[in-house]
Image (cartoon, rainbow, N blue to C red; front, side, top):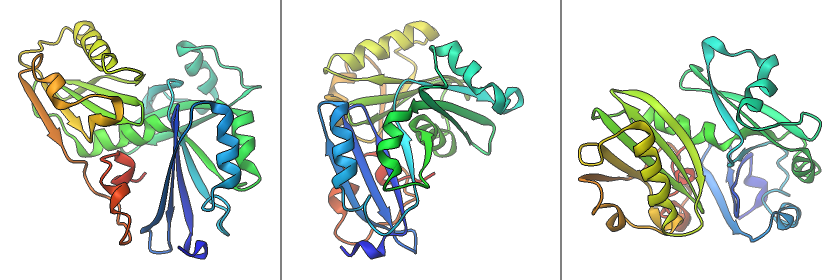
Length: 261
């Protein structure tokens, strides 16, 4: 692919994976790279060698998938208090971390997150105009805009590389949205049962919806069916167009291959 075709980039950084998507002037995805790594020290090397990051394009958006985010209703949100919101969740130092926020679902919810400034500086030389947002904003936007609840108690599982976003609804209202790092095939059930217990949901009547492919978190639909009566497997809603030849990435079932924010 001619990197001169690249007009913008979308980067998705997970605990052990990085996805780089390039769009052309028509907003079609014209290239996709997926990297896996074992240590965060490998990230700068990927940044420095990826041909898409080093194309003539200088604009892009980075979504950071981690546990350091909070959801704030718009009516309670004050941009000057972002560090305060994050400190309710975990201690955040504005000196060491860049704090950012993004509104989703017609700006009814603000997702506040943060990232290490050292990490962001590794990208600055190649993408000085890079926007940064929480990966939670990306997934929550998909969930609220395209996966309306259809039962009294409903849990959505949205798997990514080695990680899981989980959204729980009761009577159409969001009760919980969280992010879990998944290391083993047992982790999914451990976190899922903890949420069911915390919310006092009934595993026999709630509807469990898997959006995408559980292979990314070392699991399958068959692992869930002995414990939950209603399990649906949902193909992600399409909002992206891809050039021919990128079917391999499109078929991973990752939300990044279907949705844009």
